[in-house]
Amino acid sequence: MLPQFEQITYHNHDGYEFYLFLKGKAEYYVEGVAKKLERGDFIIIKPYSFHFCNSNPDTAYERVFINIRESYLTSLNRYGINLEENLKRLKAGDLSLLKFSEKEISSFVRMAKEIEVNLKKSVYGSEALVDSLLVQILIMLSRKLLAQNQELDYISIMPVMIKETIDYINSHITEEISVQKLSGQIGYNPDYLCRKFKSITGFSLQHYIKARQISLAKKLLREGRSAYDVCFMTGFNNYSNFSRTFKNYENLSPKKYQMLQNEDMS
Image (cartoon, rainbow, N blue to C red; front, top):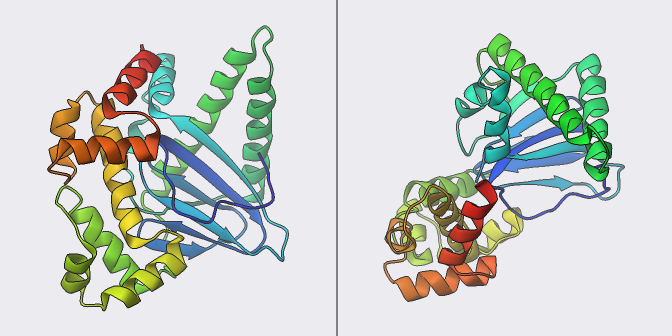
């Protein structure tokens, strides 16, 4: 749970990520915003939001994170309260920030380590213990979100041109987007924009556009939309191209992906 280096290109998950920064020099990017991290920064990343952490390899870097799928989170609602309610109010594609005290840091780290230990076990009660620990974490987060009543202010270090690029892509993801069209809309030279985008995100601009489309496609497929409809809802306009691109990214066809997700949730 505490490896030395973080992934340095954009990626996303089909569930929530809870990320607590402990020490080091690092910057956290979520979609079009970014922040220099300080001890106690706790970030909640919503499903399908692209994010990454860029850490300085010359300094010790520690963080704790937990990934939890939406379907599993929903299953925890059987305890009589809606544990998703406050998380769903957070803005998608944004850096939702909480600030943890030293006491809260110790508590979260302890529970995360206990979860890790029990996930590796296959003994009596380990699954129930993981559930109970996650419920405690979710209640703690909900209480902080309710007490805070708004997201904390911070200075975003994301270059304006990259933010504008990502915002445009996200706003037009259901359309067919070319680099030429995109650069014309936001007013930058295509070659310069592509170079800057890759230097910041680790993705080529075209790759990011496709990754965003496939991410949206996965979400829609999980919601039960037909693969054919999803093709046209994600800006492909050609099913063969959509199916081929999806398979290149996910190593299986859209229909197979949907079938496996349905089996997993049943």
